[in-house]
Amino acid sequence: MTDKLAHVKQFFVGVVLDGFGQRKFTGIEGLSVDLLYIHNKVVPALYDAIKSDDPAYDPHNEIVHGAAGTEATGTGAVRWFVELLEADRAFQGLKDETCELYVRMYKSCAQNGCFLDGLRAALRADDPAWRAHP
Image (tube, rainbow, N blue to C red; front, side, top):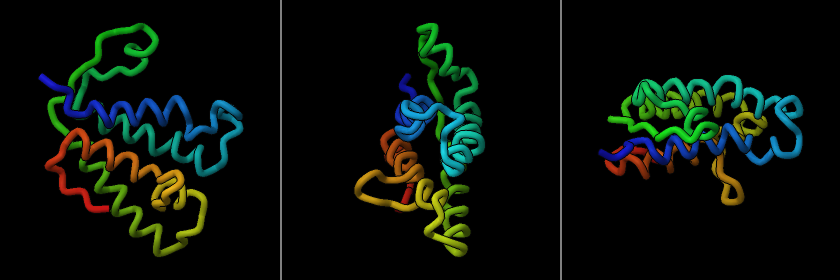
């Protein structure tokens, strides 16, 4: 059996460990307000979605202790999470598309993308039949 969320899990671990390239320079206490929101609210919600599709998923155990990876059997909860982010993007865009959080979460840019772009790309890699529209 193949892990149906392998790329989403790689994205998740990359965001958590790297902190969008900021953590290696500042530590969590030095993150900007938009990054703190992503790490304190959005990342845990993504983790919950992954756990819904793969209840045995434990990235700490895999990374720190070298435990064998687990396999998600579906992508439904992560799909739903992405759909919620897309709805939030539409709502937040009505208010202010220039605020740091909106830019970091939702504004596509060729230089460094955004959280939603990265998550969509990971989900598309895991679930090519998914309907995602940028």
